[in-house]
Length: 295
Image (cartoon, rainbow, N blue to C red; front, side, top):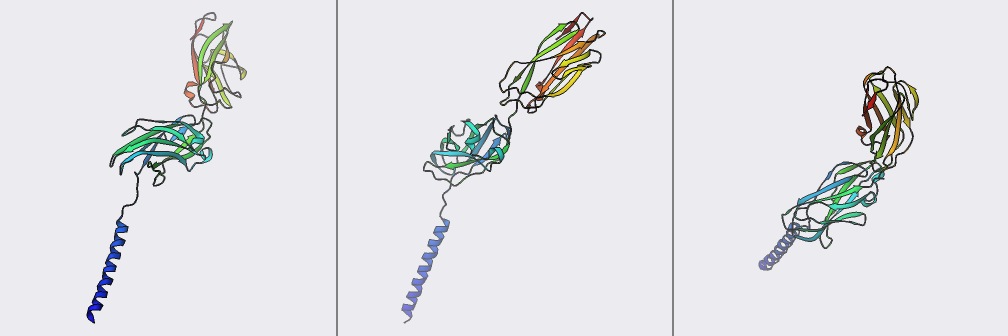
């Protein structure tokens, strides 16, 4: 009677061992995985109308042919709450490692294709796109996702936060001729807006001569003002791309002026990007009331 009992116990033990082995095999089985992506952005703060470059790096964990990486926007705020293609354009791929894919636009995203990798191979890809000039202030994350040729993926990799500032005008003043009528000098210049958007009001307009004693009155868009300096805010728009927009100011030279003087004019819109090139100056030499030169 002992023998059958021992056989039944042995059978139960065998079942337990098989079940345990099967459970162990399931736990130890490898999970489906694709290369992990690391994303960086340059710059992380950009002015609308300028470009952003995302760099995507990693090490391959297998052999991949005709895979792809899709780039998208996430966590958008304010002016960048839409899809990536709703406020950016013109994707281009830079030199890649081990090869350079083609960058193109697909629905709401950009695609880097083809991606061909061997196991343990390091890779690096870049994509540059332009933030549309009409984009208002906002932030978004530059995300990326790896897909095999069979569309298998492990999900989205969240990238860095990119801050977008509104586009600005970029006004440049260029000196023109100085005309003389009696003791009055007419200083002329032109303005060009090389920025991606129109200038906005107010425009801070000012002018002056130094040292003292050069002029008794100045006439400009600010009006006729005693002395040799003026300043006011003007309301007018210089369109993006405009060139040769004229301006002038009159200085009535003192009859007793003598020596070398500097005359400066400045015009700075409210949304100016680079105030450093918004001021121009002339050097004027007064030898007598009849001999005055300005360059």
